[in-house]
Amino acid sequence: MELEYDSAKNLWKPLKQGYQESLKYLQGRQQGLITSLKTPWDKVNDATIDGFEWHNMIVVGARPGCGKTVFKDQLIKESFILNPNDEFRVLDFQLEMLARASAIRQYSSELGLSYKELCSAEGKLSKTDLQRCLQFAKSAINNPVDIIENPPTVFEFANIIKRYMSEFKKKTYTKTLITVDHSILLKRASGQKHMDMLYDFGEICTKLKRLYPITFLILSQLNRDINRPERNEEGKYGNYILDSDIFGADALLQHADAVIGLDIPAKRKLRIYGPDKYIIDSEQVMAMHFLKLRNGDPRMSFFKAAFNKMRIEAGTAPAQMEIKSNNYH
Image (cartoon, rainbow, N blue to C red; front, side):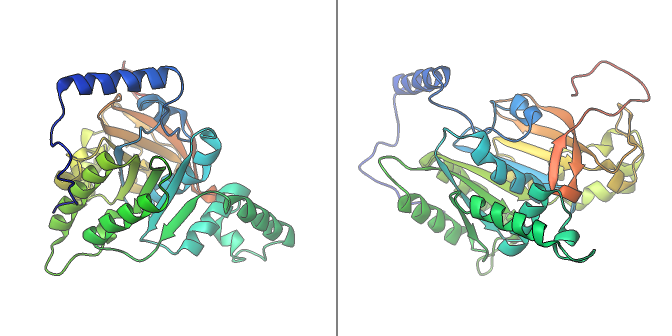
C-alpha cells in the first residue's frame, strides 16, 4: 500500500538536519510555542508528555461498556477548553453509533443526567433541561468538529484524510485530532481479511501522521483471551489488561506511540484485582493500564467511571489487602 510520492523530494535527510529539527522542537516547547494536546485527566497528562503529542497514534482498548467511547467523547468535548491557545480541528469517525446518539451522550456529560433521563425514559425531560441541551448545542457547534458515519475502507480512509488536510490547509496544515470508533468497523476491501485490514490500517496511520500534524485516537476491542477463567481468578496477574489483549495487537502495537487499556474490574466480578490485591468495592473503579508509551512512563492509574454522567473522573487507588511498594498511582 503506497501513498502518493513526490519524486522531487529526497528520500533521506542528513543527521545534521535531525539534530536541527530536534533542537527547534525543544526550544519551541521551552518557550510554550509547541504544546501537546492536553487531556481532561491529570494522570494521563503526567504519564505522557503533558498530553498527547502531535504526529502520534494512540490506541485505547477495552471490553464493551468499559469506557472507550466515553474516553473519546470527553477528550473531544473538553479539548477545546483545555487547549485554548492551540488551533486544531477534530475529524471523528463515528463508526459504532449515530452522531445523534453521540450528541446526547455529550448532553449527559454536560448536564449530569443519564441517557435514559434525557430520552424521557424515566419521566419526561423538563423544559428547563431541554433548554440547557439547546444552549450547550449552540456553544458546541462552534467547535471545529466534523463527523463521518459511513465506514470507509482503509484506502478510502487515507484519501479522506488527505482531502481533509488539504481542505483546511492555510500556510501550514491545521493540526487535527482524528478519532476512529472502532478500528474493526472499518470496511474491508474485497477479499480482505480482518487482520490484513488492520495491518494496512496501522501502516496508513503511520504514514499519515508523518506527513501531517495529526494525532490518531484509535478505539479497539479486546480479544477473547481476557475472558478465559484463569484470567478471572482473583488476585492474579492475568486480571490486568495486557498489550496482547488488544484486538489485532500485532497489527496495531508496532505503529502505536501509546497503548492504553481501560478496565472495570467489577464487570468481571473481580473483588481482588491483580497481584497487588486491590480491593474492588465499587462498580465505578476504573483501572487505566498504560501499556506502551513511546515517550512516557508506563504505569497503571485509577479513575472513577461516572458513566451515568458519561464521564471519566479523577480517582484514587483502592486499598490493598497487602500493602507493598509500587509505582502505581
